[in-house]
Length: 470
Image 1 (cartoon, rainbow, N blue to C red):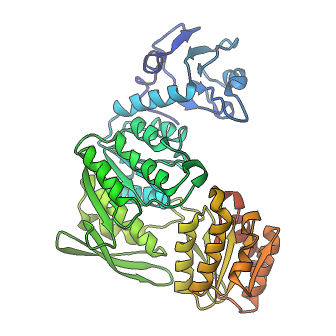
Image 2 (cartoon, rainbow, N blue to C red):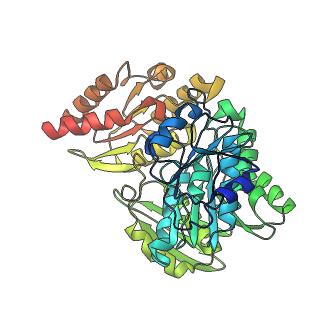
Image 3 (spheres, one colour):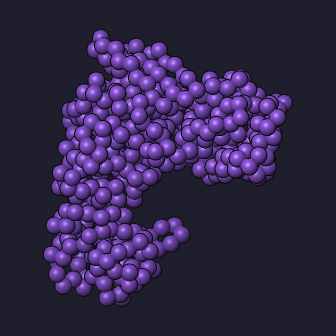
């Protein structure tokens, strides 16, 4: 995380904002030029933050960071190492405090925050893409990769540079109150909740817990700030009450005619989608190279966020036709490759019941003989076997011809799908069966989907490799 605002990144400011004790400090005005929580990535002049995790303790690597060029360490236990140190009660909280202070002293005009059970990263990339086209790319910063948790959001904020006027910050959670914490750190000017769905149920306990946690993104907004809400999502009424209590300005989107921005006339072609939406008695057509009605909703949500940040809809919409999922970092999210008679759809990045159903809807909309390759969905809790059974029945009902499953919790899915469904103990076995079905023309298009832990990208890679060689 290289930084050009060196005057803010100094020992004195770090100690003051974290309520830290300076140890072995000779020059409190000394600046550091980068921040790292990994001693292996430390460069000359860096601040090294020692984080204690479940399987490691960053304090064990302070000497290594020092040898690699770090000039300062943020610690909760003072080290015998000769490096200058700032001792705090909790280095995670100290990192967040410093990042929040730094964000408030940056040159930002707007910070736009995104959360939700599905669509966070796609919306983040869409918003960043549109703002970069509307203004200039160098004025826009977005969360890199999946830096959306209690370490990732502060590190994202510390990536702000002098030229940045807009920041798009993704916020994820797998337990209660995590979004509240992240929002208070980032203090957004505009916030979006994409949707609430049954994801990470082990950490939230119920859909109601998810709805409240996502709604807590409002806690970092100032009175009068815009909050963009999905009018079709479970929890919409709860969010409206939360917004009213905080005196926020609600901008709603969805297929509902009551939404401020109402989506209609959705059309799906093999390689693009089109839809229209209405706002204040005006109708706007949109076309972009994506798949799925849920991505039409993501695009609309992103347009509303940019509008809330001061952009004109008429100038935003034309740029969407050039948005490319893979180019903009959305690997494993409904990306298409050609098969002999159809499409291979790689949606392997992650999965929960609602996103799998959305993926199936896309598959059956473009295929005559659809194949679903499904890896087990993780973090669903006690309902896991039931949810996998529901997905199998949903796929059958929607017209999926073959179902191939992988993972312990997906083992019973063939029993609920019926004939032409099989479970496999390895990625290779599943991929080999998929390739056989494709080569025999029993299927034309294939969707590969699963949670990160299922590693279904291995199936995608195997299918591509074998078909390329044949």
